[in-house]
Image (cartoon, rainbow, N blue to C red; front, side, top):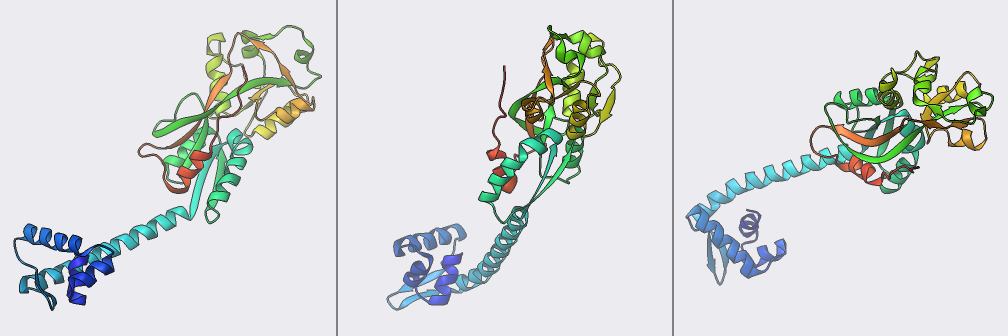
Length: 292
């Protein structure tokens, strides 16, 4: 259709072909194909140039409307892509938000300096709610499975560790804490709905479940501060306590009879994988360090 419009405007099949960046034989072939499809002659060719037939003039008028509509559609699609690419809304559970996402977002900034990124941090249940409500484009969770209504992919793994202040009796004992003893002890824990709590609940369900928490706090930072103060032992991501273990403000307590590992996942609403900035961020994620 664009070729036919160019012939009508320039009066020459050869000039129309050059304008569209194709050879004259290719242009002639396209016009003949269109004539066969429509069953009418569109262009009269002569040594003096190319003239539209009566049918060709009518078809050209229709073609102009179709081409204009296609150009408007393409412009609208580009505007939508531009609006999508101008922002990225990420929702992440606390450990990933605090210890992994900053590095990924710095790398994304290098690839997409014009994309504004907002981060909503909460527990894994809150991340799922944000995504399902359309308030986030991509989420990251820690837990046992992909939340209902979402699709996801494992991007790494994490180990939960039992920690306590060096003054706590567990820090001075010689044998590991058993799973039953851990289940029955009052611990400083994250709130229900957090990935840490989900994994711990599932791991100890065969030992009567967790005892009532000593403290139940809504952030990893608060849990660490309480444990460092000597209030009691806690269970936290290995990612979150590296500095405290290195400085001996916390001590890792050996545990036997229970495996405290979890998957780290990127998640999005059920359907196609993310596109645009969300796809680029997903490609930047790397597995978290593992320990046996």
